Length: 304
Image (cartoon, rainbow, N blue to C red; front, side):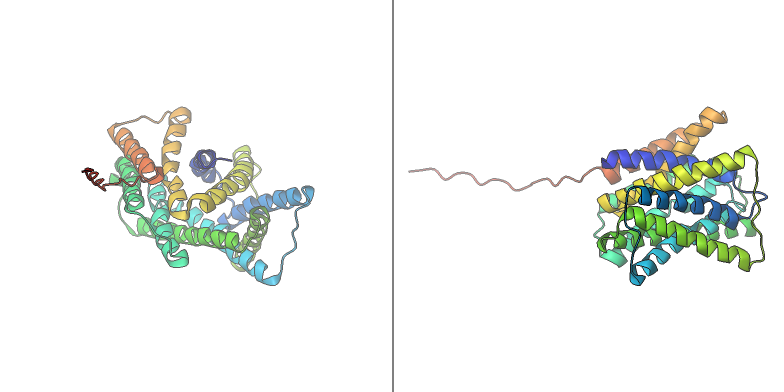
């Protein structure tokens, strides 16, 4: 698959999961919803691996790698982000999560000594400015109190953990660990950890049998977990974490379009300008930099 196709699939799916996540919040404990989401995704992936005769046998060191992978990308990070959405609106959540661009830039430098171009920094800054402009009316109406600061802090912790999971995924690639099996085991370990975490808090596994909860759970498990993560992590290894993470900036743009079609969201000048800046940042990040040869050719010497 081309990187463009993987990029579009990731943006379209994860740009719509914010709406689905809202239907997961309520009577069911956050930890339980995460367990249901990634538990179902892990089961489907294990079944797929068996069907395709893909080996699921790995040594202890590799399982430790899968455990860290699951903890950071399919468990703890979502707990913090789900919990954050109970304290702040989706606008602030989008802004906080877009910081994964900068976390990935820093982590890529630390983990893999990746050289980051000025072009990437510029695109990341444009993306962040675009999101702030896009959601400025909601931001302007938000009181910066204890509740808001708590939500932002939780979301930033979850975002940093997700960035760490991105780095672990890239290390999986260097260790020649197959992505499909790595995702299956990672989601399994993330599910196990969140199950233990839920039970240790004295909470129980409740379930909502309403259509919105079940349909959003299926969408998050199949599309938001299996397909989107496979697309994103492949993209991550193809173009680098610092570039692939710009997808997080495009999520709000997709969410705005969906809200316009489904919820009759009305556009204003902030919407238009914000989206234009986001798209501009996207172009800056993903366009290959061209080196201009400024060498002036020497004049040929005359033959006398």
